[in-house]
Image (cartoon, rainbow, N blue to C red; front, side, top):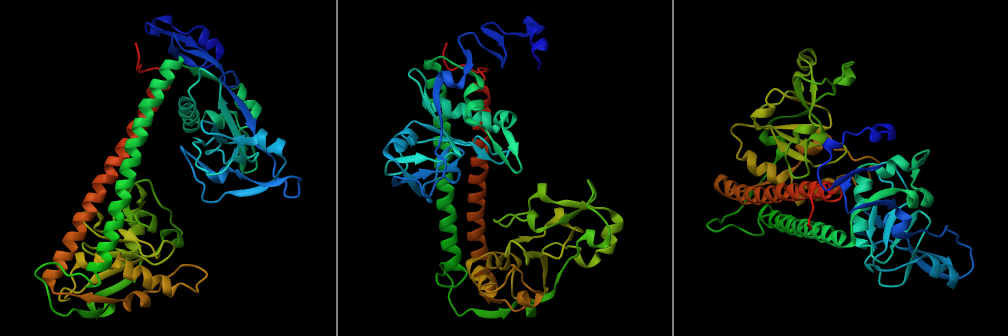
Length: 432
């Protein structure tokens, strides 16, 4: 909205207790001011490997992510005592990526002494140090919101593939700031949302780890479910299938994907957890579909990625009947009389034993690929049909629990984004 549009803004649309400003409608108690009025902005030290001084640890863009600091790879460079004092960071500083891709420029996090020793920053980072009366936690959320909504991208200067936020541009940026009391209230509410998200992430990681352990034991026979005993057979996959083939990419026939039409499955369409991501499906027209008969899918076909992201699996259900796929996916069709069950085979192909096998096959390869003969040669353990059902059921129950947690986490993240939008613009107030 231009300044002339702002001047003619219909005052009847402004709710009671709010005012029109250069950054939009905000509560009466809030103020619009430059970042430098709320904190000191410092650009980090330029990298100089042969400069005088002692080797000092420093953080760079690789250490600062959205809302978190990663100290897994901290480098050092020489700095004098004076320089180290100038560029040193302390708990409560907000660190921002000064130079990044245009969509990540300004990515930031609150530093909370994650590194165990005194540490500085390189000039690829900016340091915001809040002045008295300013909540550093609130500032970190406000700056994250600016990065998420493209505010930083709009003021950044782009050179080739790197965008620069610029210390001077950042400190002149005018934003809406609540009172100190409301800053703390907003920061606390968003911190609670972050804590919920972190707890769900940790629980999800634990559940995935438990599932991996269960797959390792149950699919190898190291652990047997109650009520089952006896030796397992080992089957060569090629002997248990009607066909193992791969599809064709439409573009190799001079045809393109379309906005609507018959589903076309690619490696990107398969999630790491073994489901089909509907948003990642492409589409082809009827004429192209007829030319790709050998890659047409049937119910209970198993898809296994053989190029790129190796080992992703999925089973074809009714929503993908008559769909097609490309040459990066093997189509595995089990014989009707096979002793292998589809659900058990799906779990085994997604398990750690197959992952280790295909890693060994590709250890010397320049590009990750599997041949159809590699797939046919897979050796698959074959418990009794009842034990296969029991194992697949246990692992499917774990998958369902993980999927429910993933959905809960996605909802929590979405709610948190909505909270940021409402709280940081003053649309929702936490104090009277």
